[in-house]
Image (cartoon, rainbow, N blue to C red; front, side, top):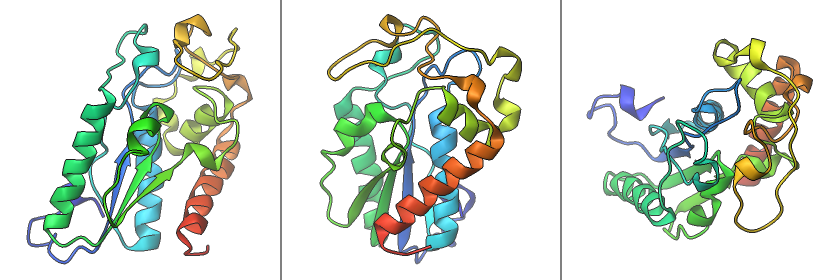
Length: 211
């Protein structure tokens, strides 16, 4: 159930809430700027059914300085993102929500989220469920072909020259002129379904709820 679709009376008695955190940033020529937000929202919707939780609107933009060389990318400072998430969680707390799950769908948000220290708030990360998670490559493109195929520009899927960045600050443009870090030509909806199930089952196990 989405919090935004409820009335204030229907929102009484909520005990568990999921706060998805995404981004508005470039994802190559074939995926929308909202890719991270769409993926984390879909994962959160699945989790809400399993956990009988309410979902807040996706918090975006996120921290995306590395992608600012590409048009359309929006970014927040880490402090701004941390403040926004903290204030959303505080609002939920005021209305009696006991358990809050902050689910992150963008790697650039991690540093801010690791500093989130609110009792009863648990931080979960989509990306760490799949080693080698890419950017607009096989994994993200497969996920989008599975959850939102209508938003994928299939005619623009092709191989790209790129190299994965190392540790420390980096700019995407220095590693990929197209913004793609991975091979989207290997993507399929079937792989997307498998990746989605791996993400959701991993998070459910992390929470100790079993499958």
